[in-house]
Image (cartoon, rainbow, N blue to C red; front, side, top):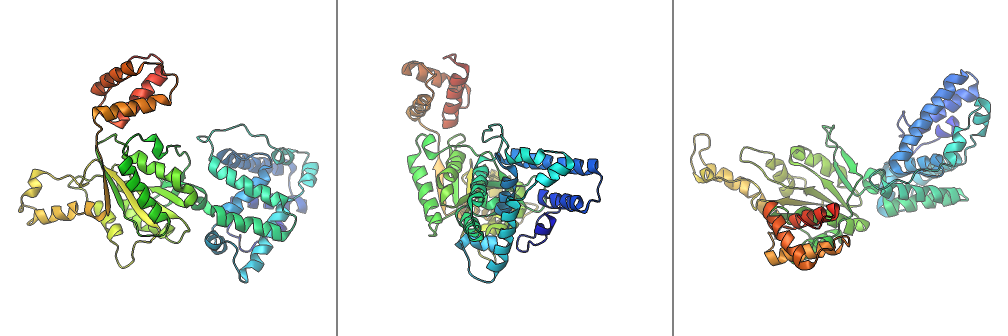
Length: 437
């Protein structure tokens, strides 16, 4: 195995602690005969443990070795894979080296572990080659990524020539992309990282725009802008503003499920990460996807200055904002930055022209070309939301008249008329089964 791995060229950038490199070193020791049996077995079990961890994370099944090798191919970002993501199969001399590497991976797929198992009197490789995983829901493993990688693994298994392997891998890159950004829907800034590195959000809700009752005009404006963006036409940064609990965040999150297959990706950024915006954009600007940078509940107090990072990104400097990036934000404030009566005084002790300073702050909202208002529903609209939500819960048997009476009682105690209040009311009825508030 170590001789095969040493032949890799394009896919050489494999981490030293990877399962593949650790196994190749173990097999080098085994073939040399210079090893202590118990120590080598312990090393193998450690690698198998690592393989099982990867399998659990991604929900791999059947042949875990094949799934792991497919995982390497799917996640390795290099000039060839990134170009293939954009255009599929590429011409040029690089194909000579790529075909060499993919032939190596095919031989690794077909690697015979039996001599090692026989020599060390173990059977763990046979076990992971026919593995029966426990069924997991999408909140335990990343099913979206799992299904893609397993499909690549199966395609390579069935390939009967090096050309067939090349076709399978390059088709995969063109269809699904490469690396974490290609295979995942949504991302956040890694919490323990100071460099603005993105990590995938693996548990994405299944909400759709149809789940948000009402607000048809607002949803239509949002969809039209997003469709134009995905089609490569001119589109605007969007600010959804208005009352709390009216579906602003839900509307944006639902776009991801509706348009993911058309190349939409979403990056959730909070204001304490704004200093990394330029670095984030630099990471994604040349990828073959359309990115919405999602800023939820965006607001600034008068003493906060992080808004300047956002203004710089929206306005652009010498380098213009990439055409594959837009910013969608929600805020309960129309002007995002809190303004007080004192701000309207033109002269203060610490700022000679304070009103000019406030205009600079308030102009942030004007940088969003499309501003969509979400406001509290009327009582009749609130009732329509309650009735629509109740229909999706057949366990709620309450007559309509009684349902609306109880809904009115609920909203008076729980924050007033809003879609969120209606959803919380329905959740309560469905969860308790009491039929009363």
